[in-house]
Image (cartoon, rainbow, N blue to C red):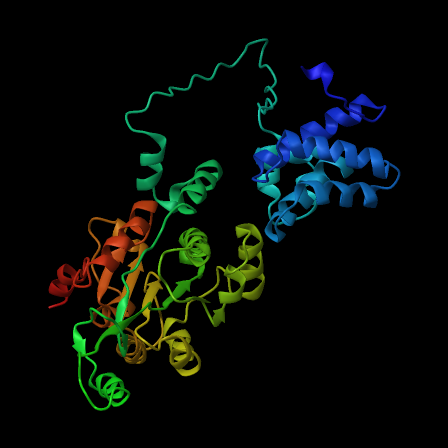
Length: 418
C-alpha cells in the first residue's frame, strides 16, 4: 500500500530523517506534528529549497506552528536542533546540573527546558563514569521500591525540599490544578419567566400596551456575576522557594477556562509592590514567569509587608477589590516594620475584600505558634489561615473557597494568642 502512494521527496534522505526527528521533538514539546504535517513539511522544503536558514525556518514554522503561544517552543527546538552544532551537549548540561558545558554561558530562555526534554526523549542521559580508584569499581545501589505513588509523595512534599527533577514534576502537577469558585448574586435583576421576584414595572408596561388590562404578572431574578481573584505573593528571600511554585499555580488559574473568576490580578511584594497581572496572561508559563521576574526587581530580598500593603491599599484597592473580590495573601508574615501600622493596613485590606485567605508555609511545622510580631498583627484580620507549602495545600484552597465559613487554622491560633 505504501509503495502505491507517490512521494516526491528531496534527494537527500538524511534531511528527510532530520525533519521527521525534528517533528517528533516538536510533538514531545506540545505541538501538533503528526505524519500529515511531516509530509507537508518535506514537500514544502522541497518546493522552497534548502539554501538559506531563514527561508528554511519560516517554511517549517508555517507547517508546524498554528498558535502564537507555540512559537517560543518552536523557536527553541529549531535553534537547538538545526542551528547549534553542540545542542546535545547543551541539552545534557541543562538536564544534568552536575555536568558543566555550554549552558553556563547564558541563561535559559523561556520554553528551553521543555525543548530540552523533547529533544532528549528516549536518549541515554547517564552521567559519565567516575574514575576508578585503585583499579576498583564503585557500585551504587538504589532501592526504588516505594510504598506510595510518586504523585502522592510529591503532593505532600515541601516545595523547599524538592530537587530540580521533583520541582519540574511538581510544576506539571500544579499546571493541572483548578480553583473553581461559586457565582455571586448581584443586586441587579433581569427578566426571568420563572424568577422568584415580581417585576411590577414590567408588568405595568405590558398592561399599558394592552389597554391597561393585567393578564399576567411578570417575574424577574437576580443576575449572576463572578468575583475577582486578587493575589498578593511574597517574593522575599525566605519565601523564594514557595513563591515560584505559587506563581506557576497563578499562571494556571489565570489561563484556565470555566473556573468562574471574572479577572485574576497578581501582585508581588518584597521591599516594594509590583503588578505582574499582564505577564501572567501569557500562554507560555516560562515566558510569563521570566517577564514577571524581570518586572519585579526585589526577588529574594528583604520584606516590608506593611509598606507594600499600604501601597496596594492606596493605589490598587479601589481598582481591583470592587464587587466582592477574594484576596489571597501568600507570605510567612515575618516583618520588622511597626506591627501597629501593619495591623491597620491588614484591617483595611480585610474590610475592602469579600474574603481574605492567608497562606503561610510556616504552618508546615507541627509546633507552629504565632510568636512573631508580624503574624500576631495580621492574624486577627484574615478570614482563613491555611498552610501553603506543598501541592496538597494549594488543592485545599478549593475547599476553603467552597466553604465560606472555613477558618482553617485561625481559630486554634487565635486561642493561643489569648
